[in-house]
Image 1: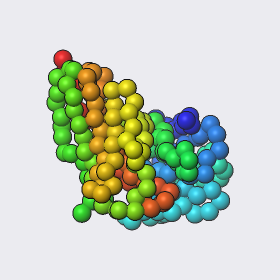
Image 2: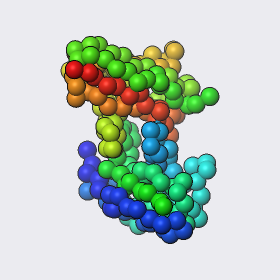
Image 3: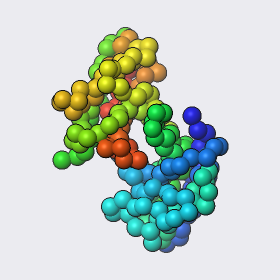
Image 4: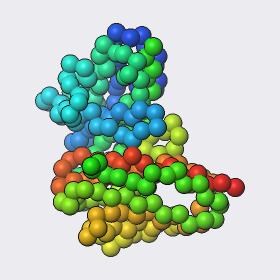
Length: 115
Length: 110
C-alpha cells in the first residue's frame, strides 16, 4: 500500500482567507483524488487531480473555489479559497490503483475549522 | 435515489455477537466492490475487497449479490476493537473513482 502524508494535519482559519493542503505519496501513482468529509457524513469527491492538466471537478465544486495542482505523480495540492464557516470539514487526499490490484488508499486528512 | 446506500445504523451489539451490514448500489454496471473501516477522527482504511465468489478474512466475510445489487459484510465474534464506521465503496463501470456509501456505525459493547 502507498504511504500518504498530508500537511497541515489541522488548521483554524479566518473567513475570507485561503488554505493550501499538500498531499505527498511515497511512490508514483496515476490517480489522485481529493475528498471532503463533513462531521458525521460520508465522503464527497471534490475532484480528480490530473498530472499535467486541469483537475476534473465533480458537480458542485469549481476550480475558482478549490484550485488543485498536480505537478508530478507523487504530489498534489488543494486550495480552499475565500473560506467561509461552511468549508469547515476534513479534507482527504487519496490515491487509486486500478486493474488487477484495484483499490484506493487515503491520506490522514486535514481537519479545517473556519471561524 | 442515492447511488450507494447502506443500513442506517447505528448497530450496538455485545462482544461476541455476529453482525451483518448490507450495502446496495444502483449502477448495474458496477465492477468492483470494497468495504472500508473508518475509526473516529481517522481516515478510511481498506478492510477487504469483495469478489464475486465471496471472500473471508478471519472473522470477516464479504459477499456480493449481483442480481440484487448488494454487498454484505458479516463480522463474527465481534470485538470491542471492531467499533467503527463501515463504508462500502463501488467502482462503477470501470470508472476510475469509487462511490462511497454513507457508512454504518458499529458499537461493540462489553
